[in-house]
Length: 138
Image 1 (cartoon, one colour):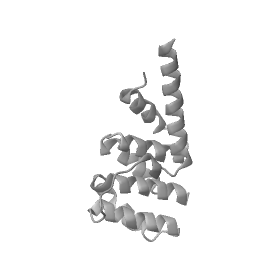
Image 2: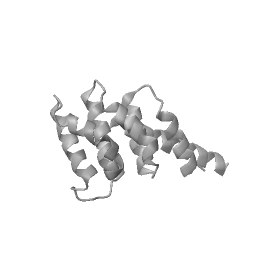
Image 3: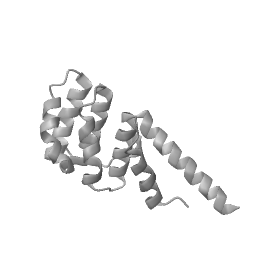
Image 4: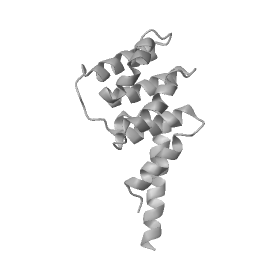
């Protein structure tokens, strides 16, 4: 059966993926699985300077989910409140609120995953689980 340890290991491999959207999705997924900030924060922090606005916004959403765990990135997040892209500016403002504890806490569900790469990661995990479950039944 495909358990939490295997899920984490599979996701950790994705932190090295050449596609920025996959790295954002994986970092957010690991955080949701209660990984340590030290594991995901460097990945998200590096992506704050990415050339694509969608990647910067995705990294900011990840930091938003981390809340106070993302405090080391506060100056970079503050800088992005003046980004040329409106979505990035909005995500940066929201992240600052969460990081400083001003926003109301709420549970994050998979329904909040809006990135196609996040869905792809979930689909791959589900396929692997189903494959292993079917193998164990035989």
